[in-house]
Amino acid sequence: MTVHPTSSTASLRPARTVRASAFEMAYKRALPRLKILARTLTANPTQADDLLQETSMRLYTKHSHFTEGSNYLAWSSQVMRNVFFSLVRTDQRRARLARTNEIQHAQWTADRTVTSRAEMLLSMSDLLQVVHQLSPKLRLVFDLYYEGYTTEEICDMTGLPSGTVKSRMHFARKKLISQIAKLN
Image (cartoon, rainbow, N blue to C red; front, side, top):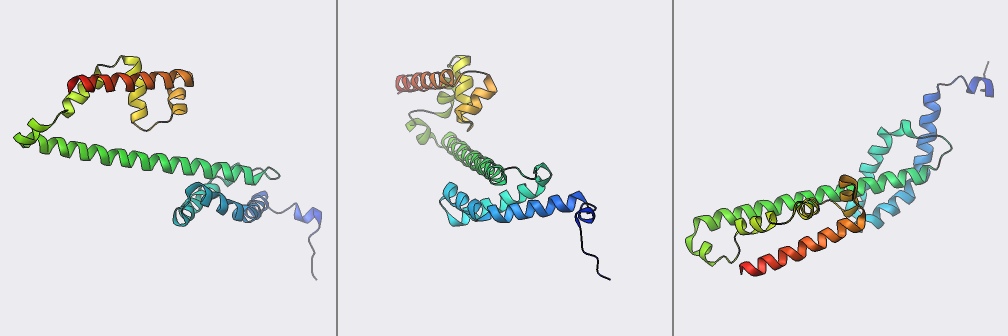
């Protein structure tokens, strides 16, 4: 005797299985567009594959947030953008750390070489002194920007309007340039 599922027996299936299968179907339908978005964001096929894989992992770990009948493509695209920006920020921090290590190495080498130190027009201590001469308002914005935060992130952190952050950044740069010129 074969039992065919009816609407009453289909509703007896666990909701989790129904949600998971709906999620998987929505993922499979969105996958071609997610691939295109990944290539658009990265402009590199290898990085696009990495981005797609990282996004897929995040989507699967957060599938409980998926609401059946909602716009899955919009949700998954936003997750991909967030993953991309997070990866970009991570890369920027790594690059900044590498630059910091190079600067520290250069300073260490200069401190140990009398002729190099004498030839240096602007030492690291002079540069730090110039930065510390900035007013606290300008220095806060400058430090956050130098650490890799965007204008919008600085606005969120400080509660300042975007125009104020941009203005303070401009004045900090202008003041630093004039102070460095005076040192030379």
